[in-house]
Length: 174
Image 1 (tube, rainbow, N blue to C red):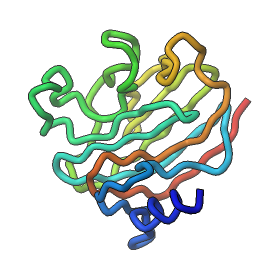
Image 2 (spheres, rainbow, N blue to C red):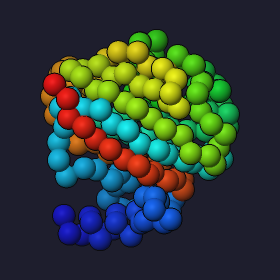
Image 3 (cartoon, rainbow, N blue to C red):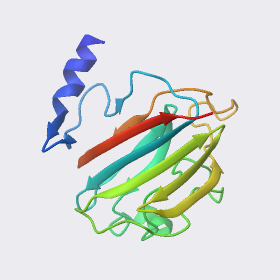
């Protein structure tokens, strides 16, 4: 654990009051997670990426609420081009929540705000005060035959790009 912390933490720092990732890959992993596990919760947070940026959020340790520059995707992601952030990226193709209901991202380099409510196995997501995922199941990723974990950490994901998070608030709900 100490070796992993020594590898990961230098890449996640505080810059101008925001959690910043320097965009460099490391040996043990990329994510920064909560020490506490959460079941049902409301999460508020601001995020910002650069051009071609790619990131996300894990809910209950499960990937992921997508954060990316959907205007600049590779050829293998043509179906996601210009769809925006906030979709439940690892849900099966065509399932509810896989794609956001509409693109609500601000231009790359500007701060965006998520409001995410996770209750049971369902996520409702607002991006910049616009509903983009409406009560959609977050499908299990690690073991597709098992139900979504009842509890788990919230993680800030990193894919090799510079990114920023700030104003992070978590409230447990019934």
